[in-house]
Every structure is written in structure tokens, then in C-alpha cells.
Length: 261
Ligand code: ADP
Ligand code: MG
Image 1 (tube, rainbow, N blue to C red):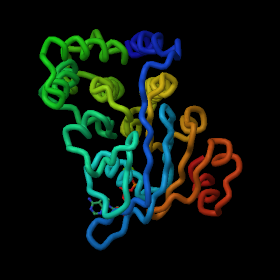
Image 2: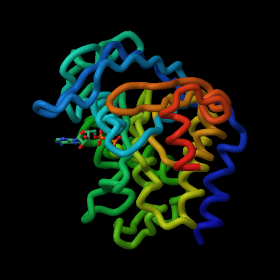
Image 3: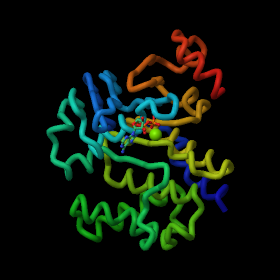
Image 4: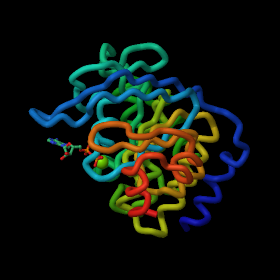
């Protein structure tokens, strides 16, 4: 079943026509602390419109905290984050929810709602969209991720891969300028990982701006325009995949790659 779903999901992607108006993200000297613990120690990063940035690094290096700052699930201590020139730190929360999408490791779907309702709810609640229009968009987005036939299933009745694709459909439904992905395949059974990564690669080709925290080095090498290596709250190295994977300059990145590859 999953295989035929994925063929359906892959077909619109195969055209690679740009469909999204991905936004630019500029991070300036971003700092963040949990109490006394400095977790981000001055992050500078530019993400070009429609590009895919993969963020790699050891556990505890601050990758999740960086993504959480980008949609203000946590408040930074200092610095600024600009989305198409607008400071995210000055943005109203409802506006931010529309413009920045996020997908989590553990899906974070509402367990008592169907796939269809999970996609619809953010449209009617956050976007205050009329029900009829929200239904139309939810149906279209679920079809794009290959789940039209599963729309009336609750999360418990779906595989992990299907649940994650519902979560991606929900993020897409908001028509965001950037989507943040935090280890979205880490909780999946191995045979379900590829379908989710293929879907993400297709979104990247279609012009979505994406910031992807991942342990999938093959995906980063294949799909990323830019790879960022973080350690201890800092960006140690950033560059194209060839530079990061084939020519790592710092000893820390060399050691990290020796451990994960
Ligand atoms: P990563 O995603 O790279 O594994 P995190 O951003 O989750 O790293 O964590 C960075 C550091 O912040 C770690 O030292 C972690 O223990 C700490 N940390 C993360 N979340 C919290 C929290 N809610 N409260 C206190 N410390 C936290
Ligand atoms: Mg993390």
C-alpha cells in the first residue's frame, strides 16, 4: 500500500516545476540560553529563497534549539531573525504560525482527529479560513502527500511514515514561506524513511525554503544546497555538500563524520 501511495505522491513532484514562493531567512548573532546554560552562542546563517539547508552535528549541539528559535517555540536571548526582511522576533504569533511551518520527530498530530481534520484544523483555527475552502485545501494537500485514501483514518490507524506525511501536509496547507524539519525520520521504521525523505526532496525541488535537522547524511549530500555543521552552540563549518562531506576543514567535523558515516 505504501509503495503505491508513494508513486502517487511522487508524480506531481516529478515535474519539478517551482510551485512555492519560498522566503529568505537571515539569522544574525542569535543567542539563546536555558537559564544559566548558553545553548546558542552567536549564530549567523543565511538561507536563500527556495533553498534547502541541512543542519548536522552531535546530540546536544543546539540544532533543535536553533529551529525552535526560528518559530519562537523558545525565545532567543539576543540577535535577530529576518524572514524576507521582517523580524520574526517582532512578529505577532498568529502571523508567525502562518509564515513558518514546522514538522517534528514525533509528528505531534491530534490523536482524536482524522488525517483530514488534522490538516483542516490549522486552517480554520490559525488562518480563520472558511470551512469549505479549508476542506478543499486539506484534500489537495493530503492527495499531494499520497494520502487521499487515508483521509478518514486517525493517527493510530496510520503507519509512522503516513503520520509524518500528514504532518507535512498540515505544514504545507498553511502555505508557509519556510518549513523547519527536526529529525522527522528518526522515529520511523527503516522501510518508511525513504518515502518521507523523497517527499521532502520533492518539496525542495519545487522551491520550498527548508531548514532540515537530520542524521540522514545521504539526504544532506543529495538534496542540500547548504550543509551546516553545529557543535556546542556554534556553527563550526558551513558550505555545499561536497565541501562539508569531502573536504571537511575542522578537526571536529572530521571526527563527527568519521563517527556517523
Ligand atoms: P540538539 O538538537 O542538537 O541535540 P538541543 O538544542 O536539543 O540539541 O539541546 C542543546 C542543549 O540545550 C543541550 O545541552 C540540552 O541538554 C539543552 N536543553 C535542551 N532543551 C532544554 C530545556 N528545555 N531545558 C534545559 N536545557 C535544555
Ligand atoms: Mg534535537
